[in-house]
Image 1 (cartoon, rainbow, N blue to C red):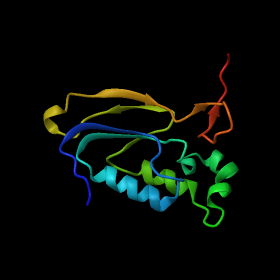
Image 2 (tube, one colour):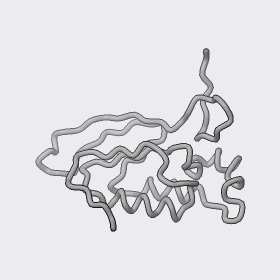
Image 3 (cartoon, rainbow, N blue to C red):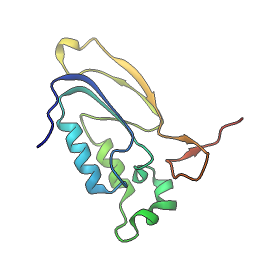
Image 4 (cartoon, rainbow, N blue to C red):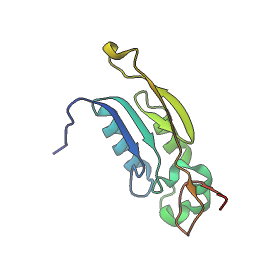
Length: 131
C-alpha cells in the first residue's frame, strides 16, 4: 500500500534515489517524487546513482550493470526533464513554491553530489581536497 504524504512545503531527497542506478529503479522513484504533494522538490544524486554521472558510469558502470548496461544520458534526462523537480548537480537554483498564495516566497540552494577523494568507495565524481 503506498504511503501518502499530507501537504508539505519542501522535499529534499539527498542521495540514493535507487539501489544501483538502473533506469527502471530511477523511473519508479522519480514518479513517486513527482506525484508527492510538496510545493518544491529538490533532488541530489548519491553514491548509488552512478548513472547520474556519465564519467563515473563510463569507468565503473559495467561492474554494476555488466548484463544490462544503462544509458547515463537517459537517466540524467529523466531528472532534468521533470517539470516539478529541481535536480541539482554541483549547481544552485532559485526555488519558488507552486502555490499562488506564496508566490513571493523563494530561496536559493546550492548542492553537489561530489565527494572528497578518500578511500575506495565509488562516489560520483570525486574532488581533490587539500589537507
